[in-house]
Length: 451
Image (cartoon, rainbow, N blue to C red; front, side, top):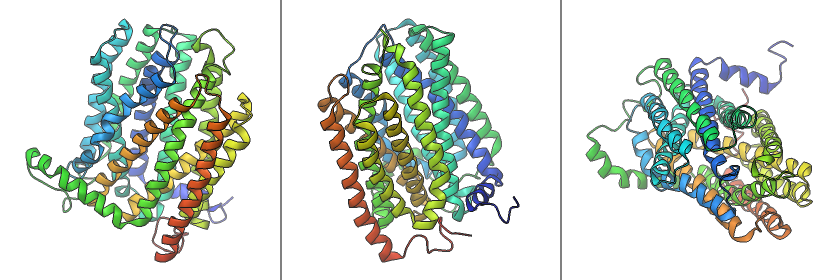
């Protein structure tokens, strides 16, 4: 098949992959997120699947809160620094520091010590991860043409998530077949992540010029760090005001926040179900097989989203696609989730992952396209804050309403109804705004352009 007759999606994929800067930025992300999967999988394993330590729903939710909320509370402030510091430096230094911090954490896991120090170090590592990813998102428009952003985000977000899953899968395989399901095994998996962080830092450092990833010299704020700290509050408020003026992006962020809140309940329910009801062994680690199937189904869903989202968004508009994804998630949970069958539940995982990834692609693209470069760092940090807080809130909501085995028809039905209501609400708000400013598929120079 010639290029002229190739499917439109293939044409767009080839277009972004021809851009060397994007390929390099994608490599930096993929390598680092494999490390994320190894490290965060090891941390989760010490709590969820370690025979030496058992945890219920509230403890699992608390674990996610400890890892996600501290950064979320300072996330908007981080964005100010994303708009001040060279993003190439952020990419390199964030991963270098993470590589160094993971090693003492691994030692603490090895000895099984209950100390606040490894938790504090883990908080820094996770926080730097969000800082790193927000920096990559803010840098993407510097290596990709505006009209190719939706395809670029599709590839970056999906391959990043798949790389994270690969890291978790590799760690689980090592634990199951080579290492032991113990503190020693999880410590070695966590230590392996340091190598991936170091390699990602090196690639980022060598692949780009000093100012190649922005912010542009004319937009970058200068001055001392002390002055920058005093400007944090004003800068964050300015970022919020800028976002409020971009209604299309703001409505998408609200839709994504609603999705994440409900997703937190679903995530906790799945973790409990696979550990208990669907686990036919005697130990939590015996559920690795069913958990692996769930990760595979979720990975396939994300992969499908990466291929179908750009094409569908260009044909029907991003806001229509988001409303459809929300509604499909609600219907999918009712059809695949309510029987509480391990095979059918994989269908619910597939649908939910597809919707989550599609929604993230459209939201990131809208933020990049609508928000000015001097505000992008702050806006993405605000988005990350909402992204994390709503997930943790959903998990606590699940911990309060779900039984210990995670099986509840009432809760799952309520969550499904919530997705349907969110779809209707976003269709009304987002659709009305899109029609007011002009349908988002009509802009020939926008991210959904057909050429």
